Length: 223
Ligand code: AP5
Ligand code: MG
Image (tube, rainbow, N blue to C red):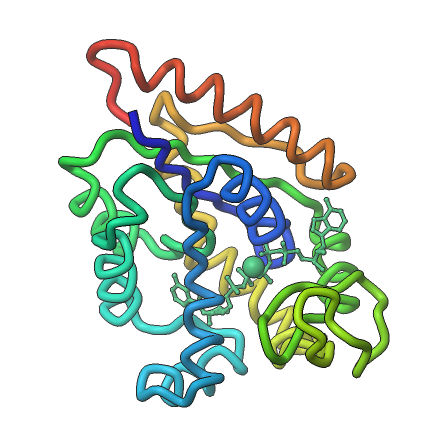
């Protein structure tokens, strides 16, 4: 059975960090809508040009655009055997569209990463990413330091300044947190403590997925 994993959590919860790691171990694609949009901004596509201002304000790009991007991405051959979705869905409308896309593809396992707000603000204030490949650097790395992955320069994400971080958290509470209630009623929903060291979070994530996956394969279970 394919492993279709969806990571929920506020900005800075560690969705990208854990999704990357888990997808690599399992050999399935990590599909991060934030990364897809940043790549579109970097290459200057029409979607990227329109999305940049919205992202820099900490708001959400429109549902229709995001659903179209994800629908197309999930149809590619490498996602047929499973995937990790990071940053999608972010609204109830996106979640309903994903249910439609997944109706003939087996259950979703949904993991919500929980982290206190002060820790989210601390993490995002210190995060650096590579301006070429988007890889994250160590928290506290100097601006301009070399990326360990490709040698590009580390920069602060344009939406990681303090004012925009606070706006992103507000947008999360208003538009994305309702998804926790949307999915909580499903037997394949799990919640994990994301305030631990990354290795501990990864171990809890793997255990949560294992437990949710065994529920999902029981006859009659709906993910
Ligand atoms: P997106 O890129 O998805 O940003 P986000 O949800 O705000 O989440 P982040 O990437 O900031 O955090 P994360 O949870 O991935 O944490 P990370 O692993 O990096 O979206 C950006 C924008 O794109 C949105 O604001 C919106 O405009 C648009 N967008 C994207 N998807 C959309 C959608 N579906 N609909 C509409 N608009 C959309 O970790 C954070 C930091 O903490 C890192 O430095 C990391 O090294 C560190 N860290 C991670 N885990 C730990 C740990 N356990 N302990 C200590 N440090 C840790
Ligand atoms: Mg991320």
